[in-house]
Image (tube, protein in one colour):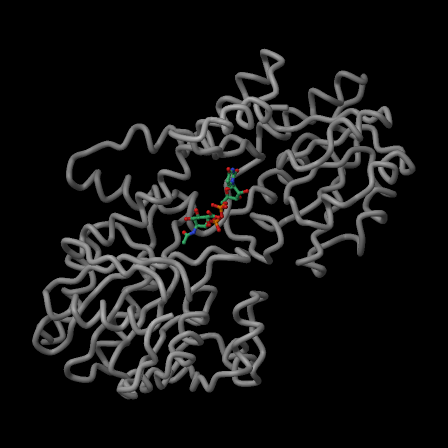
Length: 429
Ligand code: SAJ
């Protein structure tokens, strides 16, 4: 772990979500005086009561131990030496990057800037945002970077639900607009994180790193999703092939086909690079094709279910389908870019009756437990591989006369299910 900060410097974290809140807690644990700023009153109240608004092991364990001064009042920025910006950088419905939250944060900092402050952007942004969007906001207010304040970028690498990797041990990269800003940022992160803190050549390279990491993941998932479509036609089990390829101890990294790529990172970040590169006259055809393949998976999953029903002389029209899962990934309560809503919409367009269960979203669920869902359903579509869904004994499906199971995350036991005479279809298997 990094050395405890003895300088009693203070930090202000703007945006207390799944990135900002663990960061704020870790800064406190490492001896910083920590302020937190968020526009969500309810979240502020919950944090002030020592309870985490986010179900996360690190937070549940450590939030009660720290003394975060959190508020909706942006004046607290003035009390800090380091300002950490952890606000969302989403895309709009046309997949266009939306930098409004980060521009708003920069505007709030400008109004409360303390001379000499180090401003660090942790939100995922494309190359050029610091120099072309953020620095001009400060400049227009009369502040000169490197003199009145310092600007650095350290892209967040939080992996929601990961039992091993968290804010304390994930290596980071840092870039700045000048040497002093870089030195200040490196010192800060080396104080709070016990892992490599890698200095980038400039702030642009730092901005590019996160986008590249997540685009790498997106294109690899698109590769196996395309394989799944092709192998489905050839009667080849794509998952078995990927497992086989994974026995190669070098130069292969497994990814897995599924009913969709959700979350706030993977399906979003490539668009930031696609759009920014366009301004420089470059067209990321490959990234766009990968996005197209991954965006097609919810519809593909519904078509697989339609075909499976047709094979037993049924159709989606008039069939009741039970949806297991809404979250974009297992064992987290996060709906951002989840494929679930696209799947539900398509099923309803085909005339299916749909019931939903996600234990992380009781208010959005039609039933309280898996058995209650099975009771109502003719067919089941697993959209999220939550642990409790993987543990459903196939006998229960049989008991409730489930005809077909569409396993959107290839996480169920195909052989066991088929032994009960239930039609099983996975994505590519
Ligand atoms: N998915 C697949 N096939 C795969 C892997 C994921 O279909 O082989 C789907 C998931 O079901 C989910 C989506 O893609 O819907 C995203 O899954 P994810 O495991 O990438 O989870 P995220 O979105 O939480 O990604 C985070 C990212 N972390 C950061 O951006 C800091 C990503 O960089 C990590 O690689 C990823 O966690 C991880 O490794 O778990």
